[in-house]
Image 1 (cartoon, rainbow, N blue to C red):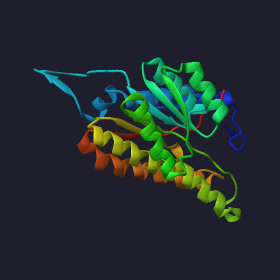
Image 2: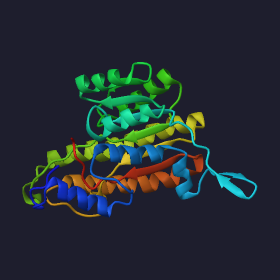
Image 3: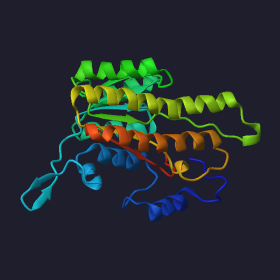
Image 4: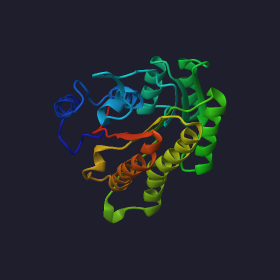
Length: 251
């Protein structure tokens, strides 16, 4: 996490983040972002928007259940790894999708071969994302959750921006999310699964960022994608949401 331009220490930044957070007790740790994603993948999240409630007489209750089968992209490290471990801890079977083969395979092995698989997937390639979804359904029989988390950044002045670097950031952060939503939605709709699709956006989706112009553009687009996809897929019972971290610590 870069704090140089803020003049704050990590402890000070964590205190600010916790004070501003809508999630009580949340800080900038990857596990907190993972916990937010787990909530959005659960039946409890339906209560927030008022969908899929079980009504019994004069009372309304939730029917919580384990998150089923989940794909998490960018799960070989960072937020994705934390999410993979947390989802598995709560009973999900998880497919880790990444291009960091050694790290991804090691995370999957540490979770357990019966509950977690590693699948190499470059989200810039739509066919690989489609194949990832098909692999998951073939391996575990269904897909309940797609967490499109893979993302990269590039720093630098807008006036000196290399547009090839810009294209690469958008290809991973935005196009990768579009492919994930498209193909997860396809599989869920075909199976009649009332699933959950989650994207990692950012606080940069609503405000600008110093020196992170390509990243900021890409995350604004992710927020737009989530809003439009929720409108199209909602009538199928497929929820589409995002988590928007305001910065997080790798350690």
